[in-house]
Amino acid sequence: MGPGVWERPRLRKYQLCIRPRFSLTALDPKAWRLTTAPMMDWTDRHCRVLFRHLAPSARLYTEMVTTGPLIYGNAEQHRRHLKFTEVEHPVALQLGGSEREDLARAAKLGADFGYDEINLNCGCPSERVQRGAFGACLMAEPALVADCVKAMIDAVPATVPVTVKHRIGLDYNESYEFVRDFVGTVADAGCGVFIVHARNAVLKGLSPKENREVPPLRYDVVARLRTDFPALLFVLNGGITTAQQCVELLAPSATAPHGVMLGRAAYHDSYMLAHTQHALYGTPLPTREQIVGRMTAYAEREIEATRGQQFHTRVRDVARHMLGLYSGQVGGKAWRRMLSDARLLNDNDPDLFRRAMPYQSDYDDHRQPLLDALSG
Ligand SMILES: Cc1cc2nc3c(=O)[nH]c(=O)nc-3n(C[C@H](O)[C@H](O)[C@H](O)COP(=O)(O)O)c2cc1C
View 1 (tube, rainbow, N blue to C red):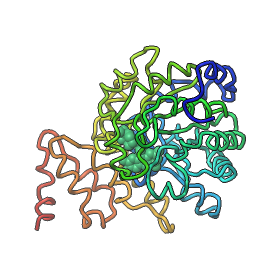
View 2: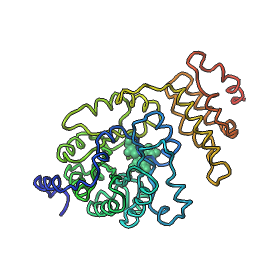
View 3: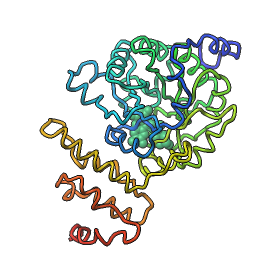
C-alpha cells in the first residue's frame, strides 16, 4: 500500500498494537527532554565528555557508526568505534545501515558495550550514504525500516530502546501522510521514540550542508505526529539555537514534543548547552572556567591512560571540540586561536587550556606574551 493511502482508523490500530516492549523507565519521556545530536566527525567521545560537563542531564548521541566496521572488524576495531567514558551515560549509539542481520549484530555489540540506546539513522542525505542505500533514503522504505528495527529490538535487552532519527519527507514531497505512515509502520515494529529533524531531505541536488539549511523547518509536522501518535515519544530537532527556545518548545501542551535535540548550536557555542541545562532543570550554572578545569583533568587522564597505544589521545583531539566554549565572549577569539595553533598543540600539554583561558577582569594580559610569540 503506497504512502498517503492509510486513513485514520488505521492509525488507531497502530496505537493499540504498539507493543510495550520497554521498561517504563526506558520510555520515561524525561529521558529524552534534552538531547545532543549525532554529528559525524564532531560528536566523538571527547566532544561528548565536554557536552556532559555542560549538560549533566542531556542524553548524548554518538556520530553515526556504519555496520561494516562492527560486523567485519576485530575486537580492537570495535573498541575504537564504540569506546566511551562512563560519565557519558546516558549515551546512545547511532547506527547506519539497512541490512537487518548486520544491524541486529551491530545493535547487540552496542548494547553489550553498555550503550543506553541504539538509534537508527534514517535522516542522512549524503550521496555516500545513499550509495549504501541507508540514511534518509530509508524513509521511502518504511517496511524495510520496520523489519530492521524489529531485528534490532530482538537482538538487544528490553532495557535498551531502539529508536529512529528521521526527516519529515523526501525531496519536495510535503505530504504529511508520508511521514505519518513511516512513523506508523516503524512504531508497529516496536519503536517507541522518534527523533524528527523537522525538514525534508533532498536526495539529489543539495549537499548535506545545504540539506541542513535549505529545506524549510516545519515544526507543525512534529506537533501533528504528536497528536496522531499519543503513545509514542517525539524529540524535535533542527534549527534550535537558544535555551529560551528550548523552554518555549517544551512548554507543556498537547502538541509539544517530549524533548529537543541540539546540534550545531551546541557545538559552535557549547556554553549554550549549560544555559539550556540550567533553564530546563534549574541546576546551578557552571562557569566556563570550571568546565575548562574539568576538561583539563579529563585530557590529562586520557593522555596518561592511552600513552603508547596506537590510537592514543592528544591534546588536539580534545581541544578541537572546545573552540566554541568562549564563543561571543571577551577574549574568545584569542582562546580559539591558541587552541588551534599547531605549535602550542604539539607540546601536547593539557595546561594549554588553562593558559589560553580568558579571564574576565584582565582577560588577555596573562596571554599577551604567548599571543605575541604566535604572531611572530
Ligand atoms: C557536521 C555534522 C554531521 C552530522 N552527522 C550526522 C550523523 O552522523 N547522523 C545524523 O543523524 N545526523 C547528523 N547530522 C545532522 C544533525 O544530527 C542534526 O539533525 C542537524 O544538524 C539539525 O540540527 P541542528 O539544527 O540543531 O544542527 C550532522 C550534522 C552536522 C552539522
